[in-house]
Each structure stands twice: as structure tokens, then as C-alpha cells.
Length: 380
Image (cartoon, rainbow, N blue to C red; front, side, top):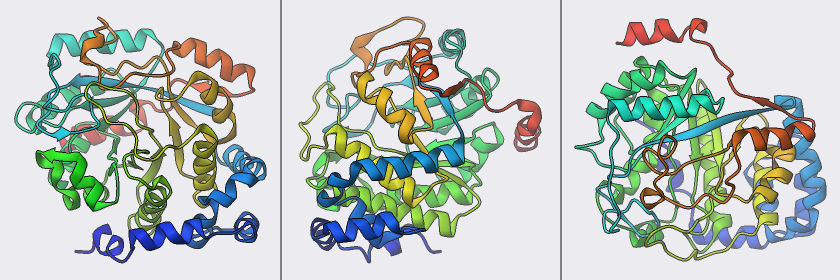
């Protein structure tokens, strides 16, 4: 069975990095003029030379964003269910080697979190956990995904990679989408930062989007952790190749992209390669030209100033008022956090800024009667 692994093995990391850095102003101009940019044009748009063309790149990205999504901006919040983790990863606050308090929410605590999130006006949630197969695995998800699904109109997950059969079961219980970031597409770097646990298996994680698509998951999120490898441009190009492969091979699913930069956390590492805010905007705009229909999301990892300026240009999905610890909405406990959010404004404050910019915040974009109740019943 063909997976992205076969395609990825044909891509040489060092060659990709050198080709990106060798792009010229003329290459960038040709890429900006292309009607349908592809891998070659993406190298130019990700290159250092493209930063001088940020203004025309952003203008074209904004036109494509507005043409595809109108003025709407979807709001969502992450709901952290557990910070238990059986992996030892150098960059994550949940890493098993970190001496932090551990917490897994029970039914009543989950219901309290759901009520607190709904009180903020949010109707789209992303379930997040550490990776702990025995205590926060499929049995836990089987028990609580339907409970959360009853409270919200849209439900996504960012948890440990699961099997195709498990994803298919969760879809039947109401799961709409899954985010799974490769962290880095460079195996030596990946090995250096994943010291123990199932997450050491690079290929198992790399092939997760294939399993998701075959399970019929509606939306699949891709991305890399910017700053983990010493060449964020090469990692972003690998994300582009992964996206192009998925759109071609598994066209039935929709796709979303995020570009998280390393943020401070307990026991965290210093970024190996630094991406500034102008470069982050460059990358997001490049992906908009590559895939105009793909959702581009921006989380509270980034500053309020950057979000206020980047969202009107290229973003169509944002979190606001995020808590990155279990139980954080009903009872704030900073000592349980995965990372420190940078934008701490409430959803209403963010919505006011976007409204003044001529955008329309969308708190809810789906209703159960549009078919998902019947799907859940059939799959239960």
C-alpha cells in the first residue's frame, strides 16, 4: 500500500536546503507570476530571496484568501484532557522526564470545561492530550469523545497517532478532524529530540495522515514545529510536499496547515533555527499561493500584534483565550501547561479587533442536523 513514506524517501534534505537557498530574485518573480505554483515555485517562495517580495506576496495571498473564504474567520479553542505522556521529547512541557503535576480529566471535569468554553461563545473545539496509550488511549477517547461531541458542533483532535481502525471508530463517534504534526521531517533531528516512547517511530508518525484519510476523516491538519531542525525552510518545503501528496492521493479529505514556532515550556530546548515574524508571514503566504483552498490556522503561540496584522492577510482559523493545561478553563492551573501562550486576550477581545478590520468572526459553522448525528448513530 502506497504511503507518503515512499515519496518522502525520494526527497534529499540537504539538496532541498541548498536549492531553496540558491533561488534568485528572478525565480521569485516567476513564482509570483505563476497561475498554479508547484514544488519548484514553492522553493522560490520559501527562499531568503522572497523576503524582499513580501508585499506583493502578501497582496496576492490576501486576494486568494478573500476569494476562497470571504471575510470569515473561524474561532476554535483547544480542550486539554490530559498532560500524561509516555514520551520523552526535549521540546514539550508534557515530556515524561519533566517534573510537573500530572492530570487527566474525568467526566465531571470534562463537562465543566465544556461549559466554560461554551460560555466564551466558542462552538468548535480541538481535543489535546499527551501521548499515553494505556491511560489516555482509545478506551479513554471511546468513552469521552461522544460526551464532548454533544456539547459542540465541531470536534477535532490532536493526540497520539492511532490506527486506521481506531480513527474510523472515532469518526463514527463524532470526530470531524485530526491534527498531526511531524515536528520535523529530518530523521537525525527527529531522533535527537525524541528520546523515549512510541513517538520515536518516525515512519509511524509520518504515515498517520494516510491512515486518517483511509479512515474517512474529513479534515487533516499538517505541519512542522518551526525551530526544531536547523533549517526551517527545508521543513516547510517537506510540509508542502506532504500536502501536495495528500491532496492528490486522498482528495476526499480537506486539509489545514499550522506553522507553530517553539514556545517556552518546562524543560524546553532553545530553537535551532529562528524564524522571525516577517518570515512566518512569508511562509503562510507562500502556502496560500500553493493551495488557495486549504485552511491556514494561527494559534495563541504568536503575539497579539502579529496575529492582528497577519489574520486579515492570509489566516482563516484562529484560537483565542486558549488554556494549554487540563482543566484550564474551569480552574486555571499554570503549573500543568504544555507551553506558554503569547496572546492572552479573550475571544471577545480578538473578535472586536477582527471586526474593526472588516472581518466576520464565525463562532459556529456546522449543525448536528446537517448529517453528523446520523453518522455518529451509524458508527456507534
